Structure formats: structure tokens, C-alpha cells
Length: 133
Image (cartoon, rainbow, N blue to C red; front, side, top):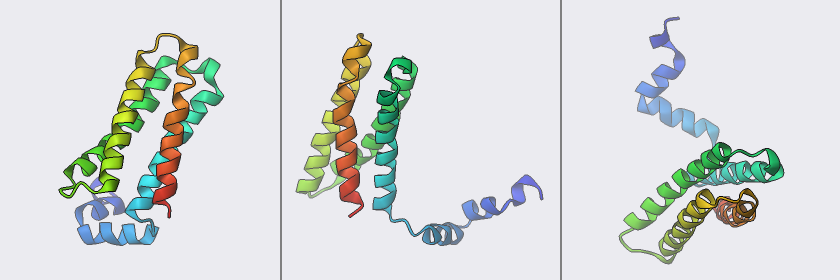
């Protein structure tokens, strides 16, 4: 089979096939978002569990991934024309996540960075928990 005739190529080209594939997974958008937040929290926890071996590049990668998730949540909440209480909370949490991320990356003392991760882990777990309900 040539590369252009792979089954996944037909899924990409056909929106109905994409929808059918999505329906087969049985995972809602909320659950996907929750899973991504849990994945990020687990990456942070993995760094903490192996803190003495954690390199700055590993920390930067984990922070970047988490920030990209929160950028999506933040932008969606900002675009909410009604600015619901939930949107305002997500915007506030987004500001916190961005600020804490910058603090972690700016901190020169490796030992001082470690406790800063706890808040990010907790925020991600709490929001994920709400998304799974």
C-alpha cells in the first residue's frame, strides 16, 4: 500500500470518517481536556519524583506543554462573550499558571523550584476532576 493510501489518510481527508473515528473512542471534549491536564500533572509529578536528575530542559518542556494547554483554555474563556463565572475563573487560573510557570523558569536555585510545582499539579488535578464529572 502506498503512503497516500493508508487508512489513516482517508480518515484525515474525510470529515465523516474523522467523526466516526471520534465517536468510536467515546471520549468527550471535556474528558480529552481532563486527560491532557492529568498528563501534564503527571509529567510535573515525574519531575518531582526524580528531582535530583531533573534537568532544566526537562522542566522547560513540561512547563511549555502545560502552558500550551492553559493558553487554549485561557483564549477560549476570553472569547466567551458573556464572561460567565466559569470563564472568569479560568482566566484567573490561567494568569496564575502563566505567572507561576515564569517564576519556575526564572528561579536559578534548583531546590527552590521544586515546591513551586505543587500548585500547578493541584490546579491541573482540580480542573481535570471537574471536567471528568
